[in-house]
Length: 420
Ligand code: C2E
Ligand code: MG
Ligand code: MG
Image (cartoon, rainbow, N blue to C red; front, side, top):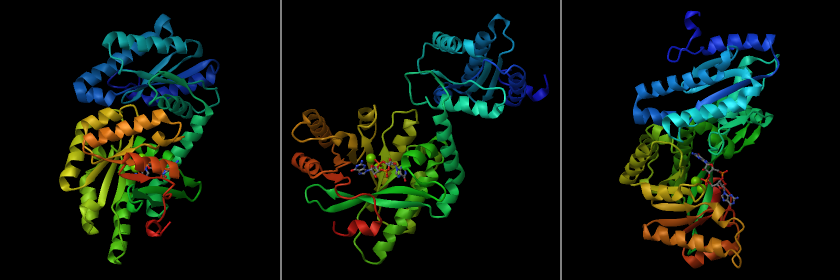
C-alpha cells in the first residue's frame, strides 16, 4: 500500500484510497453495488465520558467488526474505509446490505450492552457512471437523515434528500454574505399582558430574504446553522440588531418594552455568549432587565453542565432567562427540573385546535402546567394565541402573558407600538 492509503488509527483504507479503488470497481463492475455510510451516535459524549484513548479503542473495534462482517467468506472485493472521526464507509454487494448492517448493530450491542451506541447506516445504490464522491455524499445524507430518529438504524437515500442538501449548501455558502448585506433582518412579535391586554414585551425573530430563493424559513436555516455549528453567528447578529433598534427608539424618547432574543443551546459551547450580550448591551446603553434570553428545550446530547452554568451566569448578571417551546419535546419536565428559568413559554401545540367547549383534556393539561409554573415561582406565557376564545380562556385561568397572531404577527419594531 502507498504510505497515505491507510487510516493510521484503524488500518482501513484512507478516504483518498477508497475513492480511487471504489471508483475503479464502479467502472469495471457497475452492477449490484451498494455504498453504506456508517456514523456512530454520541461519539463526542463517549470521548468526554471515557477519554480519547477509550474512544480510539472503540473506533478500532468498530473497524474490526465492519471488516469481519463485510469481508467474511473471503469477500475481498468489499472495500472498507474510515473517512473521518466516527464515520466509516463500505462498498459492497447490494444483496448483503441489510443483513450485514443489522449484524453490525447486534455485535456492537452484544459487546457493550449499551443502546446509546448506535451505528447509523445510510445506504446508496450507485450506478457505474456516477462520481464516487457524489455517491458517498448521498449515502451520508441518508445516514444524517435519521440522526434524530432513534427508532431506526438504517435508511436508503431518496431524491428529496438531495434537494434538502442543496438548500443546506446554499444556506451555508451564502450565510455570512447575507448577514453583511442586510438580507437577514429582525422582526418583533408583540407579547401582551393577559390581564390588561396591553403590549408588555416583544420577541425578536429573524427573517432571511434571499436574492436567489426569496424568503428562507427559520425552520430551514436555523437547524442547518445549528448542525454546522454556525448558529452563534446568527444569534450575535440578531442580538446586535435588537440592541441597535432599541437604542434608536430610546434615544428619540419613544416608548420601549423589554425584548426577548432566541439563543441556541449551542451558543453556550460555540462562543462566550454572555460576553457578547454584555458587549452589545453596554455599547447601546441598554438596561439588562430590558433584554431577556429565550432558550428552547432539547433533550439531545449537549453538555448540560455548560448550559446550566451559562443560564446561572446570565441570571446572576440580571438577565431573565425564559424556557421556550415548553411541551414541544419529550424532555420538557426534565429540563424544568434541571435548570432555573424566570418564565415558561408554553408551546403553541397546547392551543392547536383548541375549542373551549370541547377541549377538556387540553384544558386539564394547560391549567395543571400553569399551576406547576406557579409552584416553581415562574411566570407563564402562552404562545400561538390565534383567537379571542383562546385569549379569554387564558385570562380566565390566570396566565401572565400571551403571544400569537391574534395580537400581531412579527413586524418592524416601531409597528408594535401602533394601536391595533
Ligand atoms: P419561537 O421562538 O417559538 O418563535 C415563535 C414562532 O411561532 C415564530 O416563528 C412565530 O412567527 C410563530 N408564531 C407566533 N405566533 C403564532 C401563531 O399565533 N400561530 C402560528 N401558527 N405561529 C405563530 P418563526 O419566526 O418562523 O420562528 C421559528 C423558530 O425559529 C422560533 O420559534 C425560534 O425558535 C427560531 N428562531 C427565530 N429567530 C431565531 C434567532 O435569531 N436565533 C435562534 N437561535 N432561533 C431563532
Ligand atoms: Mg422564541
Ligand atoms: Mg417558542
